[in-house]
Length: 321
Image (cartoon, rainbow, N blue to C red; front, side, top):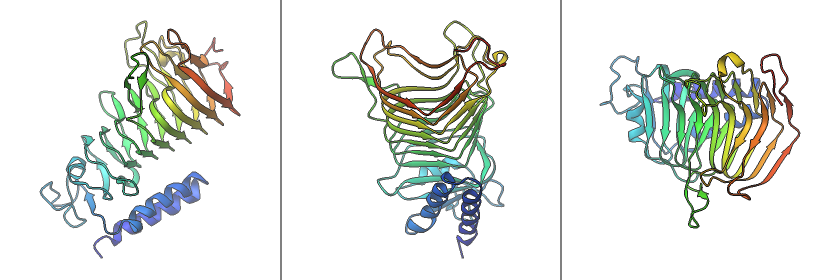
């Protein structure tokens, strides 16, 4: 009966997600269920800072849980799952060991969005982060991705600089463009982002970004010439953005920013190729899309934008176009 309580909670959450979020809910429910059943041979760790006797010297079981998420992150191996029980954990979690194909390392908040952490640095691949509240007293990047095949699912991210950030890339062999292949095949789904300076900075290859909400961008910077706020930025190759809802920004909170639903530029050799942007809804912006390809003309190409709902001319954002 060691893990029956946890599996029961998972089943309840899976049912709730399926009932309230048609389509995407069933996907997330299946994902959670797959962790509990399909990886029965892998290790399961429990973090519960409020449990009597919780300590990082414990084995990390339900009866003797770890006290910090970082301790669990340092212990995981491919296929392992970490369940973090409700509470505010004053830590930024650095994950240096990931999973493998078919055996991701999973971090799940139990119940969903009842666990608060200051952020995640994912320095490996095949990692799933699900159901957390992510915020910090000093705004920073909520989730920094440095690996591939990672999933950021159903998190509430607020009052941060960037919700999810990818790579800036490295110089390509020709020296004129940048290579983003080290951070690829990542999935960002059903997250709620509030009061961030940027929603998503999508630096990488083959990313899927869908069913997220980004609302009320907020500038934490001083408001100098190059300070900005954007719902999303894209650099790299192969990105799908669909069914996202970007809205709610006001002039008072973005200061001097020029807000775009989607922005890219190539000043430092960046590329932005093969983008599909469809079925998104975006309000309260200055430009729907800002694209600069100089000085590397041709580095931005292969874009498809279709079936989106866009409206800049709202009372909160005068002068949008």
